[in-house]
Length: 148
Image (tube, helix red, strand yellow):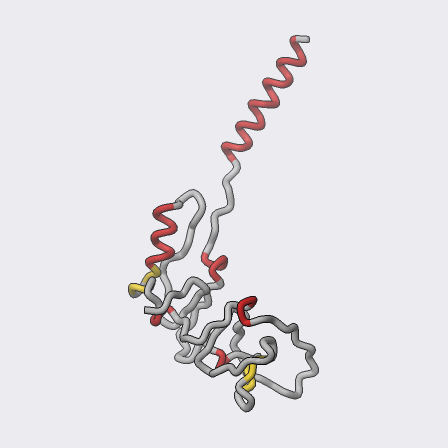
C-alpha cells in the first residue's frame, strides 16, 4: 500500500517539475502576418502576383473591383501572368482581410518610428503570451494596421 502512495507522490512531483520546466510557446510577430520591406509599393494589390491591373481584379476575390492601392492578407510580391495554368481558390473579401487602404506601417496609428506601439504594449501587458519584435519598417505591414 505504501509503495502505491509513494509512486503516486513521485509521479505528481515529476509532473509538477515538468510543468514548471516547460515553457509555453509565446506568440511571435508572424501571428500578425507582418511583412517586412523597403519597397515603395510593397503590400498593396498593385504589386501582388494575383492582381490583374488590366481588369482591376484579383484572381482570388471574384466580383469586386480592386485598385492598386488596396490590400489583403493573401498578398505576395510578384507580377500577374495570364498564361499561368493555375486554378485559383476563391474567397470573399472578408475572408482574406481585404481593405481599401494602404496598410503599411507608415500609414498606421500604432507606428512610432522605428517601432510598433501595439507590439510593445502587448509585450509589456502580456509578457507571458507575447514575444513580439517591436522594430518595424515604415514600408512593412501587418493585419493589425489601423489607419492614422
